[in-house]
Image (cartoon, rainbow over all chains, first blue to last red; front, side, top):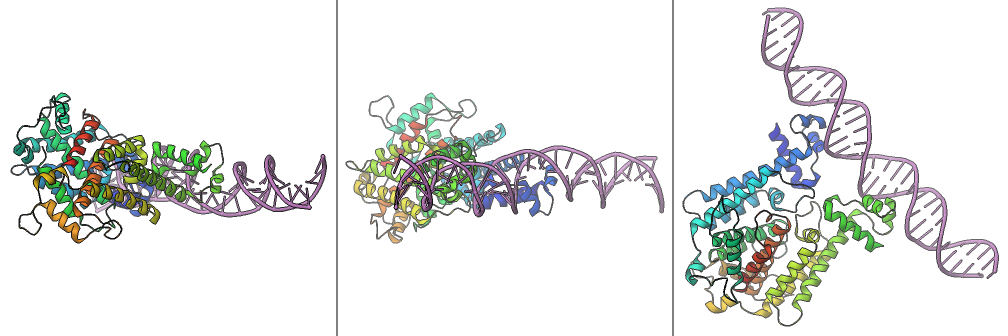
Length: 218
Length: 218
DNA sequence: TGTACATCAGTGAACGCGCGTTCACTGATGTAC
DNA sequence: TGTACATCAGTGAACGCGCGTTCACTGATGTAC
């Protein structure tokens, strides 16, 4: 019953956006009266929070499953992320889209968010230095004048080590995880928002090219 | 007068989101009655369209100004984009955020969107091949088996050449422009949406590192 | 087998709210003679 | 200088709507004796 309500809620999110989600409309669509839903959810915010939580949970599970078997593979992780995003664009936007004003995610949700990041972090830590970095050998130290912005950021990460206790990872792995996350989000969100329409190219090929560029990343 | 209405509208967008924009609330805030606004805008949709148009126009002007003086510089373009985004996050999200369901941008707006892309395209065409590509020499042809995803995408772009007539550009330049756009959008939108909070690193340094990685892009 | 009762999902009316939008209007301003 | 008029920004009432949420209630179901 809660499940059916959530299904209808997703339909509403799909064609009117999260901010237009209405308990009365859901009830009407289910052939029930509005107040009936209060047996299952304590209110509108409760339902929305549930949707957001489920979306995060689903993404975390997807990413975890993609990272699980064998050695971590950037391409597999990327494909899993893309598949998840394309399967339900509105769910993707509920997680990574324009923040809903006034809405603050409860701690449980930020916990799942760091869980996702932890998977990426572990994957890139296990993968070791990237091809590009291996080819180039040790990168220039950030102390040298004229050091690259990438090396400077790595040094910064070493100083302000994120999740130092829970998820120790070399700065380079963290850097790669962040680039993985932001670059793929860039392609996916613009694609899903329809900003590529009318440009005539195949988003799939572009995505593949972006993923490839991540492989050589220091 | 239209200007003041739009100012108030932006304030509303800022702290309640575009979908919560209300003519009555704007009027109340200006000490007027609701219907008074109909002297200046034909309705709510008219006002929203105006806001979106202004946002696109502002971005196009910013990018054009950054590309204008001297030889095009990726770093200057990137800094201009970031500055524009940070100056007003809600404006940024109005352009690149979660699409408003049911809203279709009028032709004028998609025109400004291609204008922005054209500036990037011209800049990267004028800049010529990137450092990385120059160092590597001619990239492998897409016809070879085992060719890279990047080369394959370039070949695809050559076939499905976008804006072939209006803005002729080599596939490599188009590819770089797309990567510029999507990668920077990835960092900016996640940063502005608050997904970096709690991670403890400086988004500015990460942005700089991402920009640098664009310089060596084939 | 039959009766009394508890449980509880769902109803319908109601509250107060704010929305977009229309309509006939007021009343100040400026212009023409 | 004074009068008649046109213009037009803004008002207030009204329309119909849908929203979230509360409340007392019905009425079917299942259980206990």
